[in-house]
Image (cartoon, rainbow, N blue to C red; front, side, top):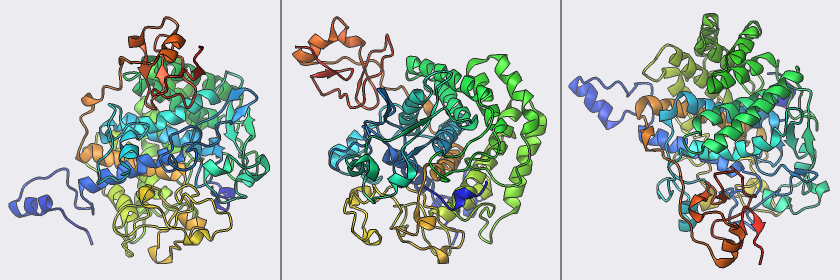
Length: 559
């Protein structure tokens, strides 16, 4: 994960259709002269950047990067005593689970889906069955097996499953699992690290809870509140659970006014302030529940949503709060968001790329700025993609002086040595990691590396982590912006999304005995192939598989 930065605060290629359109004088509203890639290429980039989160899965997974490596699982024993905290996302190219970025990233992704739902399609199922069965993990192979749920929601649900555990009650909130210093001791996959002694980053790992902080529970609760809205059509019981735990997060945030950085060292500093994050939580709860008290509370903090004089990032969120307030009739916040947007669009490089931000994780900033531009456009009912967003996305995808893609695996020439332990599937601690080669199955990893605004200075070495590390908050702005682009240029027919639904099952005799009177037809299989009982909403234990005749709800069948 970033360290140095975290000590601080916060040849245009026209498609054939466009050329013909210009020649014939036809109006082609969805093809903007600023874009350098085809719609098909943007769709591929979005698929890659979204599936990246499946390569960040901690716990039973499956994590598609390592699902065929040793056990394919890691840190399944993450817990506080006998209370499981398994699951969630690895923070960056390492294996700690940090609340500062985890909750923010999930919120950004869900906010993008909430506002630009037609930008997100369904290409695979949550367990990557098609890719795994075929051994072909590429976009071009087309081996994904759609499951009736947008891929983005499959990916984020893995996180919200964990968020539900983090929000244990109104007074208990978990914000971190693992120790950054111990985690950094060995360069091995998460699967192998979990088998090492705890002093070497293995299990058991420390769980951190009850920070004096309102920002992390605010983003956690806001993500759960959106999930309660958007996932209701797929699983109403799960949506209700998300809402209940969003309320727990709200109560905890309200009782812990303040902000706090990481407790295991200066890996992530505290958010600039907590009030803007609390506004985000309360406005999302209002939109989900319709309860006016939440909106009234959000408006009471409106004066705290001000000009940050910087850029949108995980610890600087006035842009998002301003948008939510503006959508609820606080008109001066629409002006504030526009002020941010004008600053971003007016502070660009010679390539037209947003220049405000740190040198660490450099390319996440223009992507976050592009998403802010998208939100401002929605407030004005814009129907086309802002040229600023295209410039930023295209630079990252390879429309730059080096013709280098900073999205690992995209294009003819992309970063080859990301600072990411799992991608290489190598557990030789003494090996020279700068010589590692990404195996073919993992080549389209979709990691947005930190990069640079000057491609000629990019150092493509695994240990040059300022340039080559990727993190969950880096990809969030890219996914959000690409979803916005697709929603404007090639909107997805969302009526096709039906979800897995109720299905009939057949079991072997041991499992039948375990069912104890439950109707087989009333059972449901979730996106990870685990049994659910929809009448109670009881979740299975991680690792309970539909094909396992001897396990139901993760409990061994009685003889």
